[in-house]
Image (cartoon, rainbow, N blue to C red; front, top):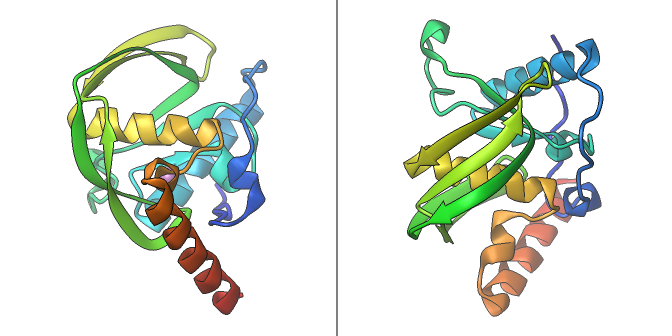
Length: 172
Ligand code: NI
């Protein structure tokens, strides 16, 4: 396994749209493994391939990412995921491994129904609510080149992006 570099705002790769996965081979499984490892290392609960510079519709999620006892972890891999049903509304604070030192309250659907494929290419369906639903919606946005800060009201968004870009320049 290898750790991957997580790109952060304003890296233009984060605005790219991911393409559907067509080959369910060993390389895909290895990428998913490396993404999980990177997510655990960075202490995130979700990571999209776009964030590591790979334009594939692949997302990993683990709400138990923070567990020191790795037997308690619950890694999930979603290939070519899309949301087919949304209901309700919920607002919660989000952060992102690609948006350093900033969190904000974002409105999402309360529960979702998701269709995706597993690493073998088998079609799957699942329903999610609460934090899992929020996390999946956040990660699927990445596949469309959308960050959580893109959901902020436009004036706040401009201000926040300007500040984050300045921080990134100073850190470079
Ligand atoms: Ni994110």
